[in-house]
Image 1 (cartoon, rainbow, N blue to C red):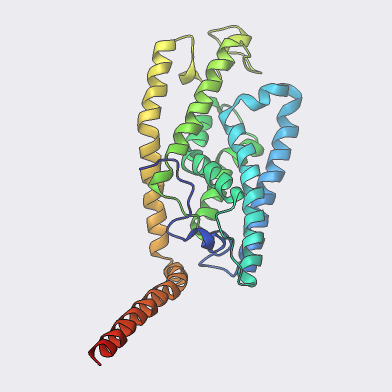
Image 2 (spheres, rainbow, N blue to C red; image 1 turned 180 degrees about the vertical axis):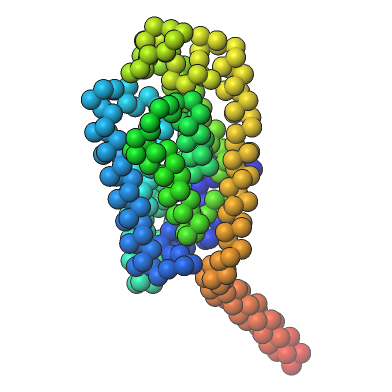
Length: 283
């Protein structure tokens, strides 16, 4: 069993537009407008965050996990909008793609990294970073984004499944490796910390590579527990969401019934030919 799946099951690969361009609660055009508003939310807040923090942080701006999330969400929403628009055009004209497009696979991989772990990013900020008066932009990208992501998830039909939980491991492993590179290169942070010189301050306290053994244990624990925990949680949430979506089952069966009818017709034809043969042989 793979844990890095890129399919759109339970939808057929050629039916990906139904998973991306439809919603059980609104029309295709309304869903497309909703996707554009979500894209606008992330793009505008990224621009505001960049303008607010770049002058004092410069390239340090990109070291934090929450900034990785913000940038990935901007890219994801751009792809989401494009796929929703493309899918709506295909549905309107009754067309299908012969295989799953590469853009869908890229989006699937990134979405399966970001969606299950967005709570983790917000939790790290509020428990390890936030102090004093919190500006609006920080609240929006460390809490508001979680609300918008899950609103989009529950209103849509994104097909998450447990066999995609390996992407969480890739996401977490990438940031863990980055935290080690950050330590070895002595990049530091824009602000100071009490224990070390400014250029040796860790990104986050728990990932302090000055204490290599402790940090390795945390990383290994996260690698073992994180993927099945987040994968199981969002598989369950997907099942709960889909239980309320009766029309999706009808849409999937609509593509399967013709195939079943063809098989039945072929089977009837074979039996008819056999009967004719038997009659002719009897004659």
